[in-house]
Image (tube, rainbow, N blue to C red; front, side):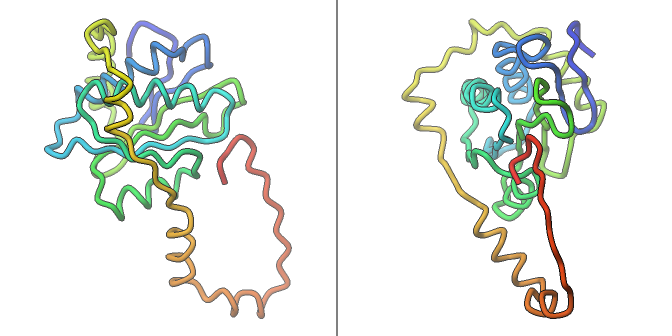
Length: 189
């Protein structure tokens, strides 16, 4: 799909930052997704992992989404499952997660979410087709429009409270001698 070296899969579009996935390409992917999205409510949640390229990609994605009329809920650095949980809890119809997932640090990508889940191959083909037609000159956005269309939200405490409602934490602690080690890699967890 497409005429570049980006990898398109059901879980998103990824490539090596600065090579396959540069700033213009990130903006074009966001614009293509925005043009493809046919929901009545042009609201989207975005978040990212801790990769060094994440913040600047986030800025490009935001600009592309605002240029296509989206209102954005930005959760910043946040684990993928929490972003999906928050999207569903707040009934937000779309999402983009900026993450290289399990790939090495130089990789990054955009996981695209519809109202139901990740996109299907035919959806990605349509987005890829749109991607090849995007002219960035047609999608300029003023800084004040970006600020007006983006709200920041921190979902982690709500997610943890929801987990506590469904888990018997004290029983787990009392009945197990657990020792936990966490290595998030480039993740946000």
